[in-house]
Amino acid sequence: MDPFSFPPVAAVLRAASTALTWLADALAPLAGASSAALAVVLVTLVVRAALVPVGVAQARAEQARARLAPKLRAVRSRHAKDPERLQRETMRVYSDAGVSPLAGCLPLLAQAPVVAIIYGVFLHAEIGGAANELLTHELWGVPLGASAAGLAGGGMDVASVALFAAIAVVLLAVGEVTRRLFRIPAAADGPDLRWLGLLQFATAVIAMFVPLAAALYLVVTTAWTLGQRLVLRRVYPLDA
Image 1 (cartoon, rainbow, N blue to C red):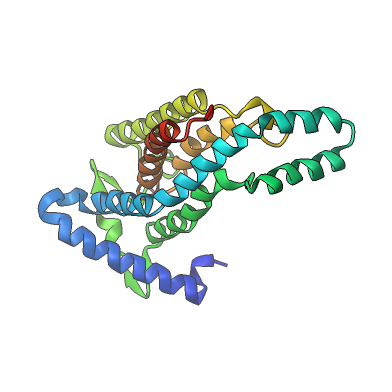
Image 2 (image 1 turned 45 degrees about the horizontal axis):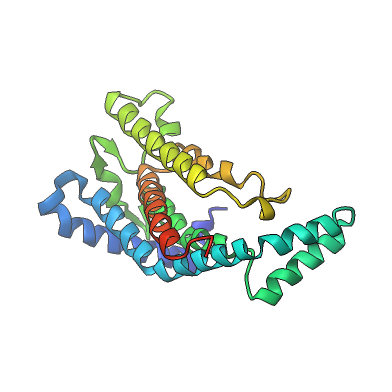
């Protein structure tokens, strides 16, 4: 069953499609055939701007967790042989300090519905019983509804290869810079967190399997995230 056919989700999909079509039409005099791609970029920027307070909360939580590092190391040293007690005492340290260990996930969770809707809009040939006009839009000659994985079966041309390669390179570069600059503090690096740095690179893989429009969203939002974290790290340094 297509989850986008569920009536409430289908209604959101229709509304999103209508809004993106309107925005693309408004941008057509400026961007021409790439107006829908520019519309996706603008929507991404608006969403990220709205989520700035969430990013600030995340930065504050990271700073607070850094201050808790000595206590967390002590807890892990005392209860290393008792995983259940270790988990309980670790959560108590966070609770007493008023810090959520999951605060770093908030921006990702907040954006998930937006990514899903953009994915759905550019996945369906028909929305609300009418042809999806957005699928006629392109970027550099590549349809916004196409994916690298889908085109690999025989529809890849030079423009497609160049565009998706550029997307992958940008996402991998941003992931590597993020991994190097924002390493997980050793005190919080438990078994469940050790591989979080590698998840930065999973976005590049995902971008090859989703419609180009969704891949554009991923590029813009990951670049925004890196820039925002660089700014907020100066405002909320971990050694404060």
